[in-house]
Image 1 (tube, rainbow, N blue to C red):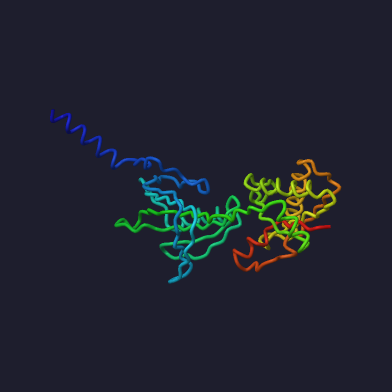
Image 2: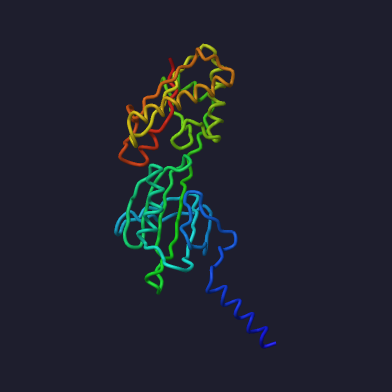
Length: 271
């Protein structure tokens, strides 16, 4: 009997001291690959506010879908806090994001991910073992504006203003129209069918992030994609033209994230 209890206690001790297991129900976020020898200690995923640190004593509150993941180091030689932040930072920068703020405990970033304004905050969790790193990642995807605009509203705006800007989303860096934007394509086609004499120019625009020539090419490809999608709904191609302006015609300040979001747009112009 004593031997049985001793063996049971040994098994429990080995489990605690050996490789710990991920918390049930927790998974890595698709934005980041897990660093070696870390396990998922805790997580949550719901609509919440993120208090994003933007300076030594400055914070901004953002609301949206907040994915929180807490990582603990298992065993072996722990990476440094610099290694942890650089690994995550490299992913963000490659996706066109930027660093907002960083100190010895926290690093904050912004980017557009899957068509959504996204904020990432890394936080070092302090513990008694100074050479062992535990940390959390908070990823907040702000709720994107759902543009419910009807064919009639589009036509009225075109007649009164001559152009209408639409919040059509694409895959990051590509010209593939995001599924959630296909309802706008349906309304565009409906507008064209209801007004057979109408001819329009589909005009693509980008922000000023990246190379100007590449942005112009991308905007042309996106304008072409929107035009092709409308034509696929039964609209004669002679009623449509497509042009990409790239970053040449901003409608907002490219110095702010909000302004850049407005500049990434598709405009329908009455011909």
